Image (cartoon, rainbow, N blue to C red; front, side, top):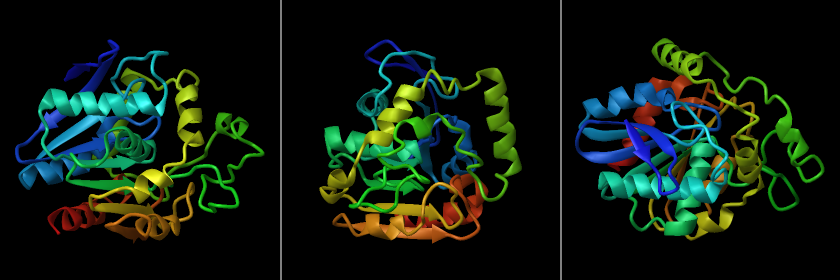
Length: 259
């Protein structure tokens, strides 16, 4: 399905099921189909499942407009309003998690039920105040380092059905990394720690024990920042935890949601 933002950009989303709404947001360069296993699992358990392709990703429109985190937040807010979602749960992997923090920074978390962050540090650039940055990114190599190939994101293969869907979308509408580089730079520049400290809703941080991008110890540090933070480190998973260990991930997420 298509959704037109206030600045006239076409986004793509899916909306299935009834019940408590959950909005899933993929990471940089990924399509909404990466959440395939979650869509099946949670729709079967009477949840309303929404998966969103943000601008320039998946089947969303390719554009030079709004390539900044604040616009990602506004897009999410506009979709929530358009669909009439009441107290949605937001779940984001990688940059998708940062989109949630951007949303919280502009709109707070008062209108949300819960938040789930999947393998994303709130600060990508390591310095003397934060040791859990993205790979070896620091102020000496930012933003040049972001132009380089990040290497493999996963520790183990993602499940077959998800991989087939993701591959089909890539063939239909390939991701243009160069076009989206301004968004990646803006994403990496941010520091969301103050937003997390002001959070009021329950949130869960899930990290992959074998993530090639982040030290999983960041999860406990982030869980301790807010009023109601929790964390889970999933063994034998890399950065794309929900597709590498979908069965275990789904159970962890369901337990947190139902708590």
